[in-house]
Length: 223
Image (cartoon, rainbow, N blue to C red):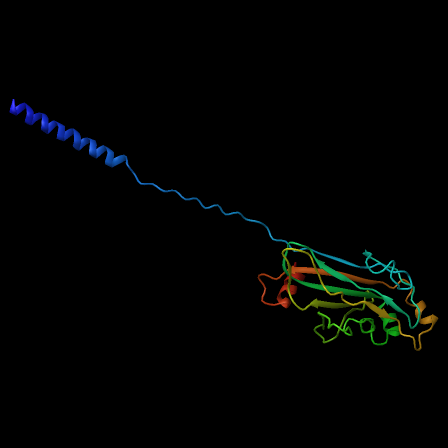
């Protein structure tokens, strides 16, 4: 009887041991974590416009009407309103901005605007100093002349990078007005400017990845 009890006790011990071994194998301590990366795409976007004016250069219903083009009737000694303005669109990344102003009939314009067309605007004469910088060419000139096309192009760069994360950013207008010289300008001189055009083009390029604005515009021109 004692023998049976001893054997049963050994069996019970064996069963308990096996049971303990099984539970020890399956009772893992586990933990799981997940990381999800969401990628969005940055963008750079600008708009360019100017106040709507009458042919004599006066504003149409104030200067709140914005248009893409105007037509002028030039007269000696008269001042005309023209305010090319860039807006950086809401959501745009930090970017460098520039404007190119191209004047047709460069030779005739030079004959009438003795100091040059840009010099007869108020871009560098405002009470609030302009944030636009006129970039000289490699030859040290203020504008680049295309003798074949008879045009001259002025490059202006905004002096700082601009971002518009939460709302649009309206940059300072490049200039507000230009004046036709009065002295020694006659009908014959002005007749030469018939169909003369002033074309303004705005560019923007991301600031990230470039050490300077100069590097950015070299890359822009290479595209």
